[in-house]
Amino acid sequence: MSEVVVVKLGGTTLAEQRQVLEEVAQVARRRPVVLVHGGGKRMTEWLERLGVQTRFENGLRVTDPAALEVAAAVLRGVVNSELVAALRDAGCDAVGLSGVDGGLLIGERLPNVGLVATVTGVRRDLIDSLLVAGQVPVVAPLARDAEGTVCNVNADDAAAGLAAGLGARQLVLMTDVDGVHDGSGRKLDSITADEAEALIADGTIGGGMVPKVKAALSALAWDGAEAIIADGSAAGALARALDDRTFGTRVSSRAHAGTA
Image (cartoon, rainbow, N blue to C red):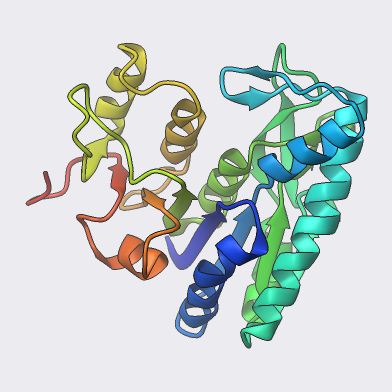
């Protein structure tokens, strides 16, 4: 397992993301960082402008060929370029790419959601070469399936696939909520994989949190790995997610001693 940390960035505008980007630049001076971004709300805005209908199934955007064109343009073009530029302004040697570039992400098509894939493999030599050079890869969530078709990928899924493929010790999923909650509304500081599966099965975890938690679970490919679901708008969010066990919700394969 490596000291690489994979960070999935939330937020809808560059202004909202600026604080976390500054933190990414700081962390990247101490350990290797891979940044994965979504851009769902930006995509929805562009789809509405172009008159393309948006529909979701189980928290995933149904993507037809028209929507895929917008996804590629907005995610790999607009959002990725903004983030790379902002990181470089913060003194971070960031490099933008998508999961299609260099065959980085290997995808498998999901049923009933159109041109949407889940990550089944990673070409890690491409990322390794960037990290060895001291660069921060900024990855847009696109991948090719077995037939070579470019597909949209849920950003949490893309980040989890990269974390598992790189043997990353920590995956941080930045979101707009403070973590996973139990049936009474109490935030859980930590949950095991079995507990997370049970909360999904009984409906306690629902909606858009389901793919997020499932992504966290798929990142636990290495003993000792953990995924943290945390509020990206909180002060010092990334540093706290990495070091403060009461911030956000930690998902691991087994319970940690002394955690609630």
